[in-house]
Each structure stands twice: as C-alpha cells, then as structure tokens.
Length: 340
Image 1 (tube, rainbow, N blue to C red):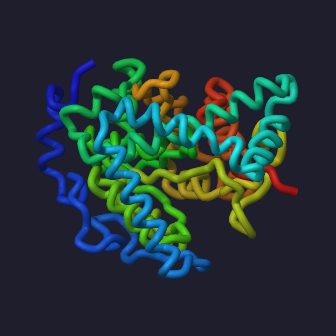
Image 2 (image 1 turned 135 degrees about the vertical axis):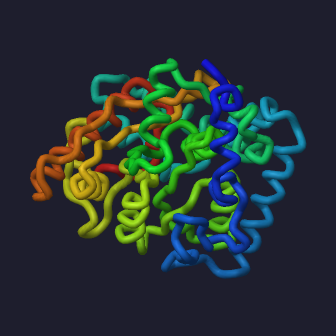
C-alpha cells in the first residue's frame, strides 16, 4: 500500500485550512470550520483545586512517558494500568458482569483474563497518546494500516472532502489514534464529544485531538452542528457503544439484549440519505501496530419513523458486536452498557 505522500494526498493536505491540517485553535473549544463554537463544561465539574492537581499529575505522567521510547512506555503503562483490575473492585465487577451477559458460554477464567487485557490495553493507549506529537503525515502509516488497498480506497472515498459521511464507532482499541490517523492521512473528521468533569483535562484532550485536524462537537449542540457539517460535505463520527441516557436513546439489541442506544446516526442518515460506515482501530496483539477495520456500508433507514430508525441502529449494533466478538479484549467493558 502507498503512503500518504505517494498518492497525491500530501497536496490535498497542504491545501486544507489550518484547523484541518492540525493547527490547534487559539483557545480550546473555539472551532475551526466545523467544531462547536465554545467549550461546554460538565454540569458536575470538579473543583478548581482538584482539577488542577489532576491536570498537573497527568501532564507530568505524559512528559515522563515521552521521555522514554514509546515501546518501553507502552510496556510499563500496560503493567501499571493492568493493576487496575485488582485496585478497582467497582470496575472489575461491572466488566465481569458485562462479560457474563455477552459471553455466557465462556468460563470465568477467560472472562477475567479478557478484562485484565482491557486494562492493559488502556495503559498502552495512554503511552501512545503521550507520543501523538511525534506523529506526522509521513510516519503515521508506520503504525496505522489498512487491511487491504480496497479498504483504504473505501475509506478515502467515503471520507473524501465535499462528501457528507457519518462514521459510527466506539471505545474500542485506541479510539483516539483512529481520529489522529484520519486527520494525518488527509481525511479529518469531526467527533461528538461529552465533556469531562475536569475542564483542564477536557481542554488538554481536545488540544491533542485538534493537532491532527479533529474538530470537536459538544453534545449540548450536537444535532444542529452535525446537520450543518453534513450539509457542508463533512464527515462526522458518532460513538454508539455507550448507554444513551434519558430520552436520547431507545432499547436496541446488542449481544442479544436490549441496550439503550442513540438513534442519532440513523436519524441523520435518513435525513441526508447517506449510508453509515462503522470504523474501528484494531490493535495487533500487544504491539503498537493497528489495523483500520471497516464494516460494509449500512444503508440509511427506509423512513424517518422510530421503527425504521431502530431497525437501522440494530444493524449498526450487530456490526459493532461482530467486531467486539472478534476482539473482546479491546472493548471498554467497564461501562454499564446494559441497564435495567
């Protein structure tokens, strides 16, 4: 497969706006051409003192991780964060409960080892994020690969500038690297984002995202902003793997059990008459190599009624379930996906 610099994409990358090329906005939360206009703070934001302590601690950790080779940093963080399995009884309980619901045929030792690997994967992800500043259009393909030339062509065609697209994805593999890679290969995306409780960490995360051209759409204004972006021919990524609170979602089967799921992607697809594309980044074992995995295009709903929207999101959930079944140790099982 060719690198971005060999297929004419470098010229396209250079022709993009500063935000699309990865230049951060002057103030986090001020958008480039597409993101939300101002940062939206969490309703239960942490106190300034606690937020500052957490921010300084994480900044020091990221600096330390960047001071050693990324491979060594990933091994260390996998070991450190891996202890979270033992140190967080609540997350361990949620994760094992979810795995029992999804894989009743598996034994308990398999579930425990799968969950331990989830924690280790989060550690590797943290180390990779610390090294995002070193990623460039010319080297990102050393770590992120398409499984075939056909899949790369499908991605570029779907996310091409001037053509509206709706990516559906989830907290799988290194989901932050997927957004980074998309921008660095010349196909920047806009992602729907729920603010973190720590506003300083929220700003830090979005600075990291913006350097590769990823614009953030804050959930409080998501519907109007997504429609505007789609009408402008942009690609929007919407997470579909977390419990949709309140009236934002309806029960849709996931692993054979009803899980409250947002209908947003199906609703936008119906309105714009465009298919949905499921995309995730799959880690190769415990390495720092990743493959972009695309599912076949999912046709838009046949209508705008709730039944048609639910049917479409059922196909989305099934496609995501197939990915999770193939790589169960790469999904974030510690979220309460199924709730009474």
